[in-house]
Amino acid sequence: MPTSSPAQPRIHPVIPPFLLQRISEHSTREGVSAAVGHAAASAARTLAIDRELVGNRIDANSRTTITATVPSKPRSAPTAPRSTLSPRLSIYDAKHEQNLPGTLERAEGQAPTGDVSVDEAYEGLGATFEFFRDVYGRNSLDDKGLPLSATVHYDRDYDNAFWDGERMVFGDGDGEVFGRFTASLSVIAHELAHGFTQYSSQLEYSGQAGALNESMSDVFGVLVQQYSLGQDAAAASWLVGEGLFLPAVQGLALRSMIEPGTAYDDDVLGRDPQPANMDNFVETSADHGGVHINSGIPNRAFALSATTLGGRAWERTGQVWFDVCTNGSLSPGTDFIRFASATVSAAAERFGFESDVRRAVAAGWATVGVTVDHAEVPGSASQRT
Image: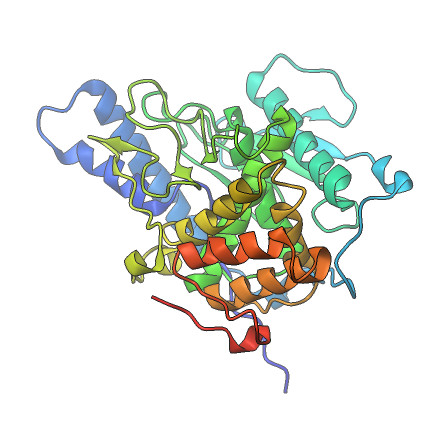
């Protein structure tokens, strides 16, 4: 008898619950300023909304079947006809309510509306579509031309953005800690990349597989931003969510891929808790087994590989990660060591066993404490913790 897929959370939010919890706790402290009190109340409300949405789990078999794209070999460079494909974009306005999708404000091909959030969402969705099309020859998130839709102005002072399996949803932020969530291209691409994972590798959203799921979104989130800016690996900031924090916050972004644990250190937010290696892997049942915390480990492996190679990160290290996500080598419950082995094998297949790419990918993983024995098949790899 076939087994059903495990139920997955309805949403994949970019702001982890532990950060919202930390901010919300300031509402109970004496002597807090009105600004901090407002931010705390907004975080508490956001956390309650997210818990309700995440708790409203949907069985994977109760929805339209999603079939992973599994090519027989790594995808080649995009062909000319595919590069002419156009996105189908639609941006809606929730008007500070929670009803989705809201009122259609801008459809594909229409002029800017003058609403900054609407227009930023439109441009961000388009930039992500173009990245996957032009760099990897993929026709939208599902490789079948999936229309991309987003809703802005969700709820009031909502401190998050999420992918719900069908669309992007953006809050406006509380105006004290977080600004509008459409302001960061890496956040837009991060959330859309959850859709890419949904239609390709289908990594579960718990434990190490969940951390890899989050890491995939960080990887492609920063790659879309680097591609849009024309940055090479050396010039890139490797920050996820850069521009979300308002000036009063002592922090650069939500996460640093190159230096996990250094993105912020603030009286209200606390200190970035991401580990940079397996020695500091966080064992927890919170946040689906620490998916937003432990993603720092594979994030750093990717960033180190890319900066070691230099040049444009999407061309070599990014290509390897894309190949692994789409070549059928991953199972939904893939852990770090199996993913590391798959990337080393993919690098050897595309660029050669003796290539600098394979060596850089292997070295990146070894630096974070995941060591693959490349003389043997991927299944025989070992892990150092």
